[in-house]
Image 1: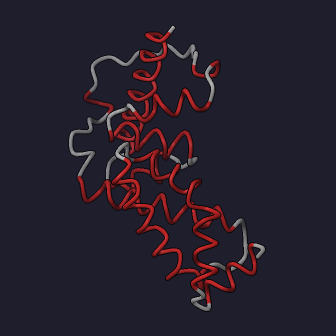
Image 2 (image 1 turned 30 degrees about the vertical axis):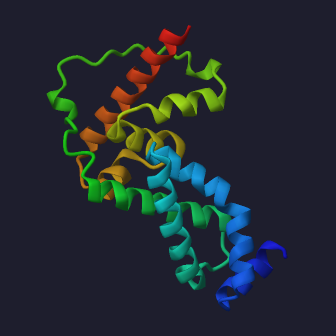
Length: 175
């Protein structure tokens, strides 16, 4: 089945189409889930929740834009919902409250493979990892992130800055 046939089959509740859709996209969407939580079991739970939402909301997909992009947004939202329930950003610090932030912008990150970088991102504390993923990978603005996570824009910026600094330290330790 091609993508359009899969979508139509899922709209009709066809179990074979749902299984094929799952088989086609589950690895990529698991990667999305793992960017937000480092525990595989939790990521699997988010993956399952995401596919349930995909199957129940598939009628809302209008065909505009990429279907995979539409799905990815659902999985990001499922991961964020889990993180909000877990209250992972309760210890986030606003930018105004940080005494010193290094402006060292030289980045050895560009010299690493994507896999090596993603492994290091997985090691970040949950709050840092969440903000880093939303800003650097998903492309959301700090304003959008602040609205999604009910934090201030400066908290989003500071968490992103701290995530970058921590990644840079980890990279230097590897060199």
